[in-house]
Structures are given as structure tokens and as C-alpha cells.
Length: 380
Length: 170
Image (cartoon, rainbow over all chains, first blue to last red; front, side):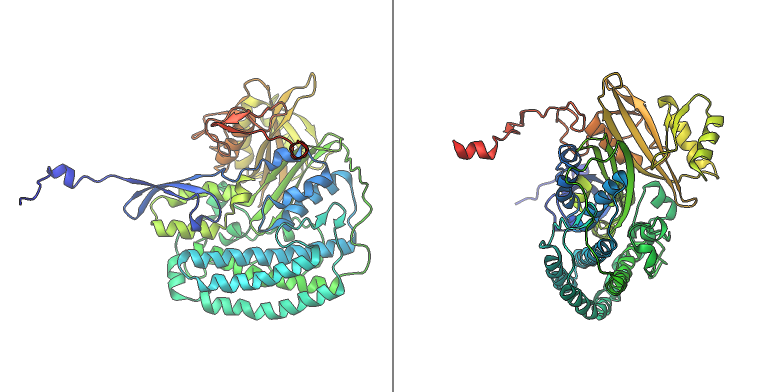
């Protein structure tokens, strides 16, 4: 038997391969897709394709009353629904000059910071999982489960809370729940060190993340990165500290920034490390709030027919994925004329195409995980 | 820097191109002539006194009031260094709105403009990749417009659903 002889050019002919990552890929964190053109293991470009989870939340906002829209905002980012609630409520309150009770503000901050811990736990847990470390993910979810239980006790829901209402919060946090939260935090603080031993100082993990997909300060500004992604590039900026809202000015907390901990400033490891530190800061904030919380009503008297005067407002809150902006336009009627939700994940997606050029396929997974993009927040 | 000062500066630099300054509302805003938006944005970014290094948000509002029909493109600019912000607004006709892209000033505008193109149908001239972002390429209409009517069928799948109550009563 003679072997088939192919023309030389056909044997050595090479071409770029176009592959589709997602929309049901475990590392894309929800339904989003990348069209990746690769030359072997090296990426030529990775074009994000989003919109799979577009639910037209902004259009729905024009059809609901202000009170009626609050549950919908939960769905804007289901990993951090508290912040989406709070952003919209703050916008409505600012438009109508509604007062929030002091106890209500503290309830908000406690709920939000617990939610931030839960969201960051998912972020750092799945980060490990994407890189190949499955165990830390289970440890992270175990703690998150307790937070879900606490949330259930606070507001009756485990994921889409609908807790923060215009004028305050839906339900007061009882003393019993406060004690439980404190017990949880006492348990949680040492757990962060456990994560560090398990994941953060793991040599393989560091090697996979350090010096990968570096984002400089200028790029972060150009692409409008926000939150932990911005801070990891060395910019000390936190809405809670710099454009204070709620009772944050009275609270004492640090704003962690990236220092090039294990490699270059603004690499994947810095973005991870900033989130790990924020876990502890959030825990600190909740402890202070539990101590400072005054007695009183949890929600102020707000008319059922909520009609803010005509006007427009842009409100920012510091969500786990960064600056969440609500641009609400009122025409004086019961319904918002326009609601715009500006989210951190949406702008973070824009930078992936640029950063992916020339990196390895495995590093793309690290990059997506490090930006902590969240499909519902991108598509809304 | 106070927003009033920024406005005065702009008026001096671009006479006749900026106007309708509102300083008495929550987020002070000013109207910019559609033709001058790129120059104004680049000036605001590069001038050391204003240094708006970030485009926080870019969106649009569809105004359908009689005698005042327009698509208003809204730019939220922010400066981390100076800690000030300003809102720029550009009025465009509802029929075939066109405006130059500010992608060259802030890269973040790329995705923001794609979203506004998709949901409002504003044509950003000079944009590098103006495709629909949220909806499928062959979708008809721009949903965030006030007079939008959803197509009855997409790809052979009905987009309508009988109200549940009526269905149960049948």
C-alpha cells in the first residue's frame, strides 16, 4: 500500500481558527459569547457577543410606577440586587426630596454590605474555579449560603430582595437577626485568612494571574472601568468615600487599591486581591453599623401615589461591580419618563477585545473572571 | 471647577455652539450643537482645568411632546482628578438622527454608542463598528423609542401572548 502524497502546500497550510466560546460556557459567567480567532493557543482577537439576557428593563421602567419598578431593578444584577434597589430608590428620593429615616439608612448599609460580601464570594470563588481550583469555590459558596439565610431573615428573599424601598427599607432588622449577623461575621473574618492560604498564596494560582492582562491607569479611564477593576489599576476611588451617600461618611473603612502585589500594577492578580481585601472592609462596615444603629422607624411616610416633580437626576452607588448609575427622567407623572441603568460590567466588556489580542486562550478565561462581568448586568 | 465656570469657558472657546445652560437642577447641563460635539468633548478632556478623563455614561431620551419632538443624546462627563461632572445634551431630529462619534475621545463610547444605535436608532457617523448590540441583527425597530411597536413575529416565533386571565377563562 502506498501512502497518499499530498501537495506540499496543502500539508503545511495553516489558517486562523475561529471558535465560539459560550454562550453556555462555564467560564463566561452567564450567557455571553466570545467569537475568538486564534492562531494555535494565541488569540488574535476575541469579539464579545452580548444581548442573550436582554430583558429591556429600561423600557419596563417607563411602564411601571416608581414603587412598582423597584422589584424589576433586582433583575438588573441578581448577584447584587440590593445595590440596584438602592440606586433606583436614591434617584427617586432625590427627585421627590423624600427623606430616608436614619434607621432605614443603617438597615440599607447592613444589607448592602452583606450583599457585597456574597457577591465578592461568588466572584473570587468562580475565579478559582475558572483557573482550575474547584475547592475554594465550594468554600465560598458555603459562606454565601449563610448570607443567603441571613438575607432571607431580613427580607424574605434569597436572591432578588426587593428590600430597599423609596423612603427606607421594607422591613426592620430585628435584634435577633443583628445578633445572628454578628455571629456570622465572627465566624467569617478568620475564613478570609483560610481563603488566602487556600487560594491567594497558591503558587499555581499566582503564576496564572500575575502579569496577565495588565490594565494601565489611562486604559482604565479610556474604557471607563469602575469599582474594583479601576482600583486595581492604582486609582484610589470609591463612590462611598468620594461622593458620599447614605451614612458612609460616618463609617470608618479603607479603600483597597492595587499595588502590583505579585506582579505588575493592574494585572489579574491585583483585581482579585482588591476584592479579597474588600471582603474584610465590608465586614468592618457591617460591625460598625450594628453598633451605631439607632432606634426608630425603618421607612418614612411616602405617598402611595408617588409623583416626583419634573426633572432629571443621575445617581451613583458603589456596587460590587463598581459605579452603578441611575439616570432617571421624570415628567411629573406617576411613571418615570426614562430610566437608564449604567452598569460596571457593560463598560468592562468593552475592554476585553483590546486586552485579548496576543494573549493565550487560557489567559482569556482569567481575564474574563478578573473583570467580574455579570451577564444580567451587561444586557439588562 | 464650578459648572458655571466651565460653561463660560466653553462659550468663549466655541461661540454660538453651546447654549441653554441649566445650573439650577441636580446635575447642571448644557446643550451643545450637534456639529461641535467632538471638538467640545476633546477640549473638555484635554484642557487641564476641566480634564474630563472619563465618559461616565452616554444615553438618549426620546421626547415626543408636540412642537418639541427630538432625540436627545445625553453625555455624562466626569473627572476623577478634579472631582466635577457635567452633562452635555445634543438635540437631534427624530427622523434620521445623525451625530459624529466620540469614540476617538473616549474608547468607552464605542459600546455606549452601539447601545444607543440599537435601542434608539441614532446613527453615529464615523463609528468603527456600528452594529446592534442587544438585539439580533435583523430586528426591526428601536425599542426605547416612545412610538415603538414590537413586531408580531420574529423568525417564525410569535412575540405576542394572550393575557393569562383571558386564557384561563376560555
